[in-house]
View (tube, rainbow, N blue to C red):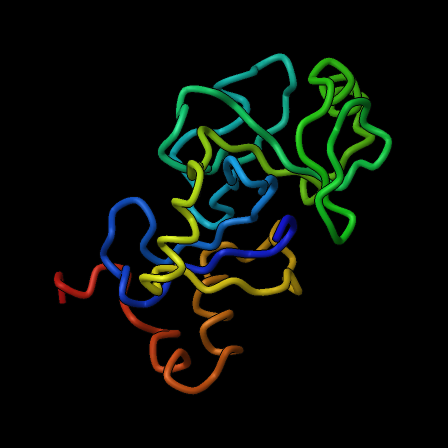
Length: 176
């Protein structure tokens, strides 16, 4: 399951934590699962949190757990201590080495994404949510580093059938 995308089922539309969410699953084992919501930018930028990097990147809401901690995913295969996910995507790694590469402009903005917090599930919790049809699990055939505002809708459209009907559904249907 690591490297796959968890897509919130349309029945979660309007849910404040996970409505229209696309989560990159970065860890999964018998004890827990961990991922990052890749399509929900916050109002923060990296410049605000780490001004010395001098790079204006949006910060995304990775999930409701530890939302005061900064995490990152990237395409930098040479970043020390990073963990391979899939499709040439990695997470974590030595922050100082990452900072140096950013300062030296060796990294393009579309090679990394920063998150406040993560989405996490304890033993059996994610399976229980699958059984309740809260999530769809798909192969990551999408560029998670761009078009975040359209990602969930694009996936719904690509899934076709009844899901395609939700592709253009409003974020909060009850407000219409």
